[in-house]
Length: 185
Image (tube, rainbow, N blue to C red; front, top):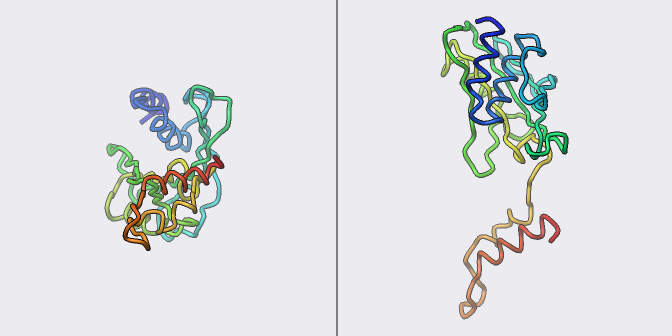
């Protein structure tokens, strides 16, 4: 596939700006960046992988920098860690697979990238011939800014238990108070 064909592919996939940004990550590693424009505001910054990845195939790591608010593209940027697992024997007729984690709060790369080798094996054996793209979504895992809320992770906040059986437990109020403490309100 030529670079101009890849540029058209990126335009067709423009159903959401974020997915398009991920496609740009994949394509800019193979084409001249000037040919591919996603509102001129998404940027891929290659980096060393967070852990050593065992494979015969190439694994690319980096940060996808996108606006926190797409209506204010010059404002604060989010940094999302992206890992691109290339196929051992690439099949150009197969589209890449982009993994979107469930949630809430799922971060497929794991703390400090500890799951990267699991994904490498998944790419090698689960998606032969395809490129697999895995990333931590906004606020999770290695992304920045991180949206952890330690106050809300306290089990007491979530348990509908009271030491006094005559007292009504208001779990939603405790959850709201915990999250309010996280954001300083």
